[in-house]
Amino acid sequence: MNKSLFIIPFYNEEKRISSDEYLQIIEESKEIDFLLVNDGSSDATLGILKELSDKLSNCETYDLPQNSGKAEAIRKGILHAQNEYEYIGYLDADFSTPVSEMIKLLDYAKTNPHLNIVLGSRVKLLGNQVIRSQVRHYFGRIFATVISKFILRVPVYDTQCGAKIIKADVAKTLFEKPFLTRWIFDVEMLLRYKTTYPNFLTTASEYPLDIWIEKGKTSIKLKEFLIFPFQILKIYFHYSKKNN
Image 1 (cartoon, helix red, strand yellow):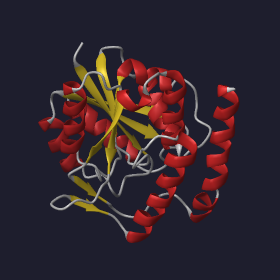
Image 2 (spheres, one colour):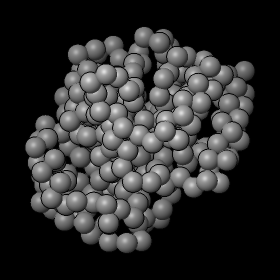
Image 3 (spheres, one colour):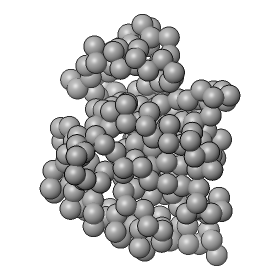
Image 4 (cartoon, helix red, strand yellow):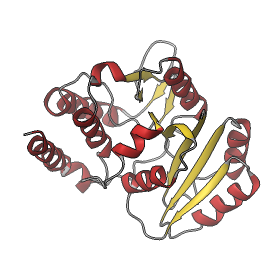
């Protein structure tokens, strides 16, 4: 068992999907299987995804009739995946993290088999292409610092990067139950990992991306930014009780 699966969730992406780009990228990545999850889109997204999977042997479309958010789309995609995979990864539909970077994360995981999770990390370094708005960067740094110091209590630089590689059996365990929040499920996933698996610091790792380019506007609304502190507290108290 050495196959790997990349899951990509889609919600009303009709105007942002380039069929030609997807065809080329997926066709060039024949060693990877792709699961395109339609999260109850109300536009023509599903039809575009089905056309892609009809043309590509390493691509499947999985349709969710109702929109339930990114966390649930990825969760259901992971549970839908067959048991033939060694690693499962997920990334965003706009390819802000290119598939080529995902393959680097996957290769890093394979060469370090003691790792159960590899997190893509958006660190701006000399010579790389990590491009994001200043507002999102500074908000992200504040968010990550609070999460790292007070919630996870482990030094994670970037919990919210949409690129992650997880051993398939671990992923199915971590994503077995629905998440408490729609947008910061990555934090909850890491909390689940910390409470379920020993040696967090030696079995999870971050990998700095060479390329991450912000594309378009975030789909998170202002009111959802404002309720982030309450979502963080909700997760914190839920898992604090679980550990007591």
